[in-house]
Length: 234
Ligand SMILES: [Zn+2]
Image (cartoon, rainbow, N blue to C red):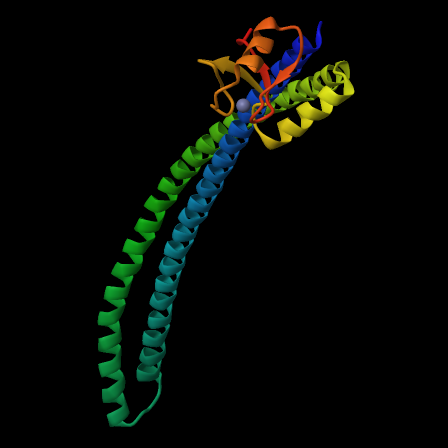
């Protein structure tokens, strides 16, 4: 290989590396997107469980209220039945028992409804859990597939980086340095002649330079942007 061919060989490796890096970054973004979806699935499931827990709590509190009201009625009734108490207090207790019984009826109805609602919601919750777990497993599977693909590409990139080192070593020192400087400054250190202009900087090239490129006997660099110039892409 002459130096021109060696430059093109290096540029081939760099282009492949560039494409590969782009693919790897796309996969990383996709992985992040799926991780975010898993997280939002988890959060939604937490909220769902919490709403069921609160419903059950409300039902339990209502049942407790029923028991407490019942206890109070019994206590009042016991006092009415057993104790000798002043008439005024007896009147008051009777009135309270009446009120509490009405209240108890309403509370029992509410407690029953809440209990039924909780039972229905518990069934729905277990269905929701199945669906949540299935969605999560699917996302985990997708994530795993993406990770494997990305790791494969990363190994490929390692191999390409080694090939790049070899291609660089092939170049004479001054060309290697020039290529590396250019490569750091611009994404494309190699350009072709297009309608008498450099495809890198778009500026017109002198006739002398064009002639040297056409002859193809030596490495030519653009007089404006310093890119390596070739007559056409291979
Ligand atoms: Zn140029």
